[in-house]
Image 1 (cartoon, rainbow, N blue to C red):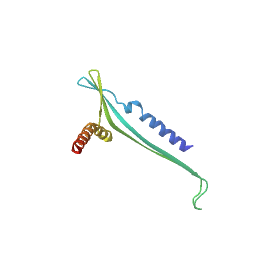
Image 2: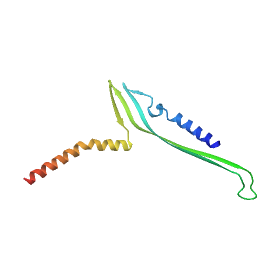
Image 3: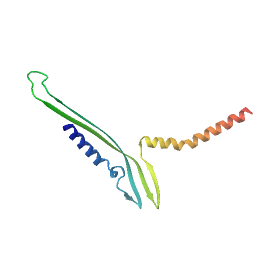
Length: 126
């Protein structure tokens, strides 16, 4: 029963930390703009326990039980929602997401380069 109590308490603590308010922060007013921070939450937890009946050595006696648990929580800011004059935009903050966004921003330029290179190849074949 001790293991179940430990895991139950851990689940309750995690539920308390992972509310909507943790992911979407309180709006902040800056020079007439509303800014809402957005966070990414990662959680890991586990627990275990056991009990024993007999002594492992003759000098040690008695019955034993044990339980343990551990948890980790990571909260990273990932974006801001900005509301200005009725317009809403999302601004990414650092991390791998911004690298993906940066790569996506480069796609039109890469497509244009490929189109130009293909056109040059077609003209040289004539």
